[in-house]
Length: 140
Image (tube, rainbow, N blue to C red; front, side):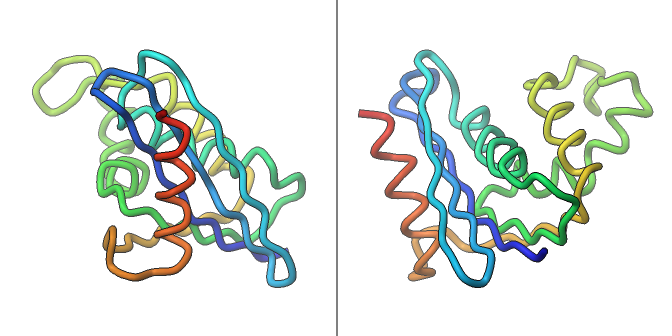
């Protein structure tokens, strides 16, 4: 199967009440998933969205994930390699923030053939705008 997934996270306060959302497209159908957490951060919600979406896909698949978070895209495609080599320490020798979620996301990416695309936020992309509205709605 081939999937396109749009993800977003939001937070009211940082930390504060957070929301995450994902839209999963399989070519025929659209599935919207979303959730919230109390006392969290925007970055954690940005990470939670692709984790939850990838867990919904049960068999090994081709997946393109669209995110407006450079933190997520750059983290999973570039930075994580160095973090693993450096025992989960960042370039400033401090522990990587949100390691628990980075590990979960990395594990999810091992199951599927995942490619990552960055999209500009609030730029008229139908699915990015919708996923943003869903994530923000969970912060209320």
